[in-house]
Every structure is written in C-alpha cells, then in structure tokens.
Length: 137
Image (cartoon, rainbow, N blue to C red; front, top):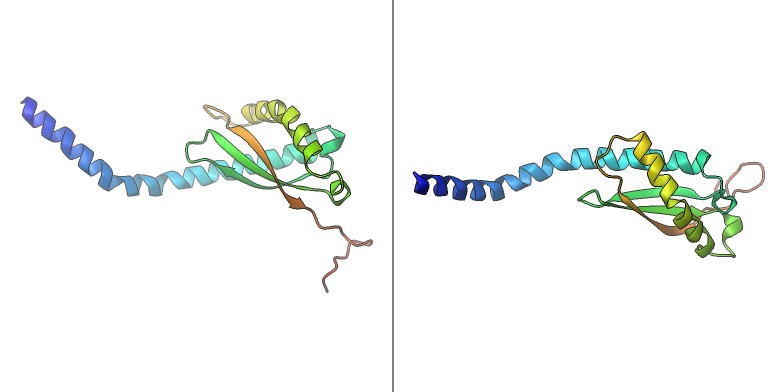
C-alpha cells in the first residue's frame, strides 16, 4: 500500500510539471486584474488625496506587479515645471507618502497583503501649448 502511495505522489509531481502551464495560464487573469485595480487606485490617490505640494502634477503612468504580488513598481512622470529640479525631491516625497498610499490601498482593496511600492521616474510630461493645443497638427 505504501508503494502505491509513493507512485501516486510521483505521478502527481510529474503531472504537476505538465499542468504548470495550465496553472500559469489561469493565474495571469487574476494577476492582470489586480495589477489594473492597483493602478486605478494609485492613480486616484495621486489625483485627489495626496496633499504634498511636491507631488502636484505628478502622474502615474504604469504599475507592474511582481509575479508573487509582494512588490509593485510604479512609473510616474514629472510635471514640466519640476524638470529642472529633477526626480530626487519627488522621489523623497513619494517615500514619505508610501505608508499612506499603502494604508489607503489596504482600506480600499480586500487583499491578504498590500504590495511594497517602489516608485520609478519614467520621464517628464510634455508641456502643453497655451490654449490646450498640442505641438502636433
């Protein structure tokens, strides 16, 4: 009986490798949905709830959630008027606001754990011409 049990475990291991691709195919849907929801929530926080003057005009452009869901890399753009000072003061302000952002995510989403946030500057937002028209025709 114990040898039968061992074969069963071994066969589970083998089928586990074969079914890994099918499990992997089912995980990304939830992962992408969670990533999208986190992006929306963080964007809303940036638009309305963060009161630090250094963060005015900063826009969230991307959010990449790690496969295990423990880390999130958030890409942001600087407003054109902050281009001269560079991203360092904004990154320091984001470090100070990280606890608040994570606590708001925990309140708004039903997650087992809220991911650790890492902010990465991806560039400077383009300056709009007066009158709301872009430079392109």
